[in-house]
Image (cartoon, rainbow, N blue to C red):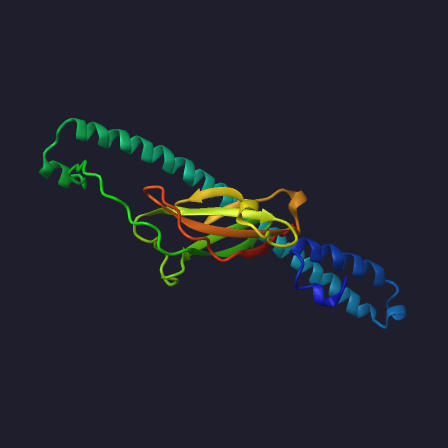
Length: 220
């Protein structure tokens, strides 16, 4: 362990490294030029940090569970409401009644979607074995809105020590229609480097230019 690495490793790796350090010097303080008071204080700091890391992991797990429950209930709700709306439209309801229910008058005219003219850019928020990938349009970085006519952003990734020379080496992750997207990893992926690239996909299926490559490390 080098002191310059302390800010580069994951919380769990930091705890493991500091436990090893403290175990080694405790009881042998004089040999290391330290005092018993210093190792006692360090043990307390390690314990406090571990408590906070445990609390953060528990909060993230609860957030993931709550989000999953929210997503399931939203899917059920949207499915049920779509069935009801289809029944309403099949009943040839008047424009006035549609308006009272907050529904637009049905228009079966096909409108072409704009083609992608820009690229998204990604921002990575780190969790334990998780990357929360947020994206915005490069031309409107202060807005969370997708460009007009875009269905969502394709997310691709490459796992390795350095980004590949060709886009063909990236693997498709998902088409995300609403930022952010949570990308989960296995324990065996801890400390691996991940390279992400994104591109817009329009509602008519057209694909835009690739984004800049974003590098992230998987925290264990």
